[in-house]
Length: 226
Image 1 (cartoon, one colour):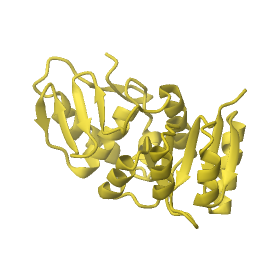
Image 2 (image 1 turned 45 degrees about the vertical axis):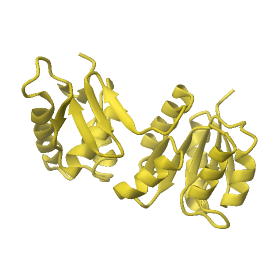
Image 3 (image 1 turned 30 degrees about the vertical axis):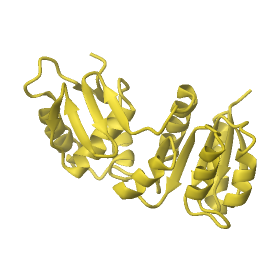
Image 4 (image 1 turned 90 degrees about the vertical axis):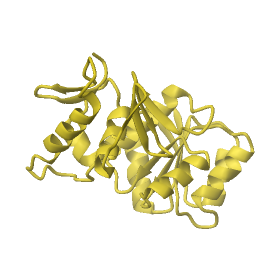
């Protein structure tokens, strides 16, 4: 039997699209189109994950999330939101979400993140950091260190590294990076990825014995994994 997902989304077209795609991927999906109904469904704790829109009628997503966590319901929650500024993401994480995905998004990324949350079984607390070998990224302070050494990154480099760390030891394709980091749903035909990967590699690997960021010829890139 497939994993059971609760989708709380008030935009009918978006909800139908996600539900259909999740169903095709083998999930059992229940839908709610407002925060009050979403909280009612989520409160029984029977779902493997919850996809929660931030802006909802009757009760907004942040209030739904806070109410769930106050009731000790630890079902993994991924927030969907058009609000993508660092402070919005921090607010979502501090409210108790396990992940935060900015609209518009590629369904492939949503699916990957939901699968990851289910595999992890949710976090015991709020996710505030990511790590890969001796590399650490703090989502709240936006501080990056390798073996304790502070690495100064530009905002786009930080977002690129965060994406790579969320897919650590996996091959990440150019298409995934274009969609996940630059919000392009087409290849603009520029070397924007190569330039940023090159800069990021210098900052991560120069002065260390072994490289962390690898180019996989003909496939993409991989962070960690030898």
